[in-house]
Length: 114
Length: 115
Image (tube, rainbow over all chains, first blue to last red; front, top):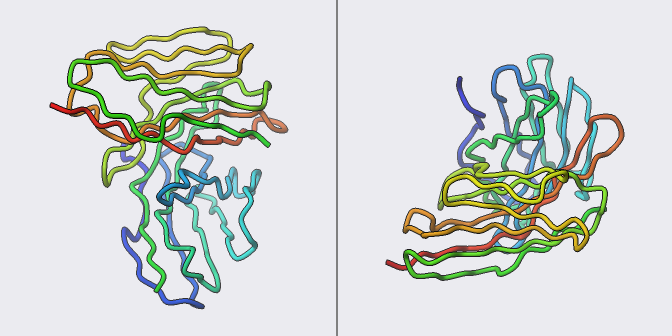
């Protein structure tokens, strides 16, 4: 079974621009979560999508948004980029069944904002 | 919301020695506690997890203990090897409405195993 796939692997943007990141979960997994990872800040929860609906949201500004498609693939969008948005963005999928708490991570998208 | 604190932030041990990483959580409703290992440049990977109805769980050289009364849990690695060098994250899940659960991570521990 293919793992969680994130594209692109690297992105370089300038302040004020917007960016869209993509995540394809493990086949059969219906939940996709997004995390921001920065040195010293660990993994910060952004949001979680399940069946095309956002069902959990972390403490990030409205510039961070996402969506999920009917095939469970998810996209995350960041508008009006700021220097502080430079980070590794990880998505994770889970089955969401009875023992569905196990999260499987993708390799991440490294975003650099100049 | 849930708050997870992890200590130490860095840990160096000699090969063959044991390593212990400790985490505390704030929400007594948390009921699932996974540990993830992230090697340099790679994705976090689940190495062991424990549920709130269990006090200890072992998997070869790795063990996790949970003290619900004190709200802390620990990762124990015995007979450490150089390939154990990585960043380790603890996490806790607080049940939200329905089946929605939010995973809160600790800030990570950089473990270095010295040959």
